Length: 457
Image (cartoon, rainbow, N blue to C red):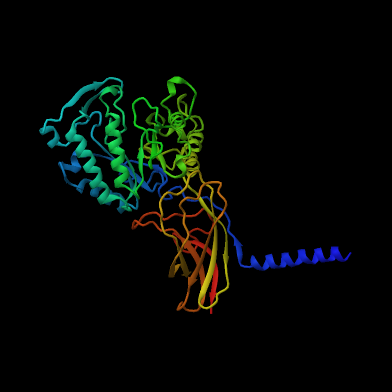
């Protein structure tokens, strides 16, 4: 009897201690995060699309000839114009620089042609409609040197620029997509491919660079890249994405990813791409009506894609049903951070302890190391901000809850009733902040997640 009584008392004591430890803990209610959270979602071509689909990024191409004016001289104005225009709309940019673009002749720098660079001119009859192509001689030593020096200068000036979301490597092949179909014999050799990848890796340490095709050591024409710090972009998304097991579909993205041994690449490097033009708009319908269109949700789940270029939801206004389905599906892309609970401790010696419990309910991590801030709000205004020590990076879907523990120095803050809040601001002015999947997101001030009330005396 005494033994049972002792056990019961011990249990009660443990419960009492645990209850005190959780005294300031508050559970926060889930609510879907906005579709236009930064660095994820659908990406239209650069322009004004106010009445179309919510987005945080824009895409565009730039010809190399507009940026490279001599062997080691550069004109950054065309890129600056693009970046500034998008930044003014609060959007970061995804872009690609090309040497050749079917139907255009503006990619190759004029000084290289003047110096004797050979080009191959032909008509691609496989495209609809047929297009004239101009492919440079990728074996030309001067061209190869220009590409390496350009990438070095490019990275020196723009690595870490907050106006840039992602860069697709480009430069080689049609549209910078690392192929010259149907004239594959004209494509750059493995040595040049390796030189370009080496240059990008050396030049860009912060801004993500994405390649078109995942490749291992046994690929017949492309240099291996699975072990490199590049993401990928699937430019036939929801058309040539899922592995079908058919030999004719060996070029499909997931098939190549598996063959390259890079199925876990998304855990550390971002995945993007473009919804196949034949799928634009239709991919979000309950019945797309085209047999080749693959299930969008399955494609997102398989690839862990964070962003996708798209024109289907932007070129013309979508029906209400298509818009609703698109919002539901696009919201699943990339990350979705939910603060499940917060513990606001007791103030002592001018210090306020706070613990934030964070989980990722999305399909991919957040790849940018953006700072975390706390704030004391009153009547919708930010009275004081504090630097947080927490990180968003590296938190994968399914990981255990990550706890941010911080102690805020509130010395000098006037007495009163405040709301304690947390935010992850965009380092680009006017850029979309990361907004949490919580009901109290933006409840007291735009961009802030309200955690709870704090009384200062």
